[in-house]
Image: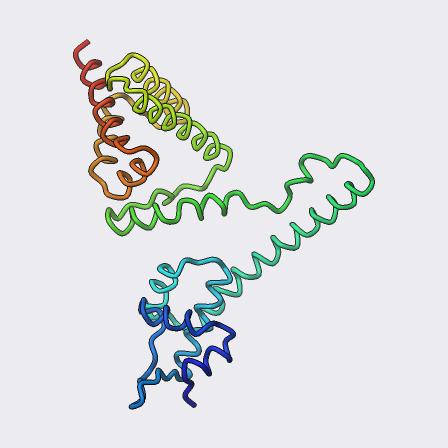
Amino acid sequence: MMYTVKELSDLAKVTIKTLHYYHKIGLLLPCEVSEAGYRLYGMKELERLQQILFYRELDFPLKKIKQILDDEPDRLSILFEQRQLIAARKERLEELMQTLDQSIAHARKGEAMDQQEMFKGFNTEKEWENALLEQREYLKEKYNYDVLEGNSIDVNDMNESAIEAKYFMDNMASALREGLRFDDKKVQQLILQHLDFLNHHGHKMDTSIFAEQARFFLADDFHRTMLEQQQKGLSYYLCIAAEALATENRNK
């Protein structure tokens, strides 16, 4: 049996606009187009759409879904994997529901809830995986480098590092806006404090290595854009400031 876009939209409870967009990006193509110009979909396309919608329920980005399905994996293995992912989410949601019910009960009684119990069910490790997803995929695709390969996520360490990185970049952006020279003592002190933090967290970072990293951020489209979106000129400012400090240390 063949389905038009309208019929498939009604069957799968997705909008016609969504199906047109999936066609446009190559995620779900019709098996044929009728003489009248209607897109037609068969059972194979229905199965693919079902798999797409399962992944969307799991918050997978469309680009990632296309990458997975274009590798033409076995349908049964995909369904089993999706079931495991949804089961894990169900378990987490049930735990969150218990936390919510306890919170409501304590609020009704006007009692303070145990601080540890307040946050049961929140999966901060998964949140970090999602936060790193775009950068991780970019680095794997362009440089064949996986930032998490062989490493488990230490949530506390990641949180501390994120806070420090934001503090450092915010202050560097502020220094740039204030018109401080790249070799100003305040700017150098900001970098040295940042390096001290990194070294205390096992990164083995000196001024020369940091300058190399800053040059990479400037040369790489993804990282340069990320810095420039925070403050125009920040990627260049960071690079020349890091290089100036590295040169000064080498000459001592």
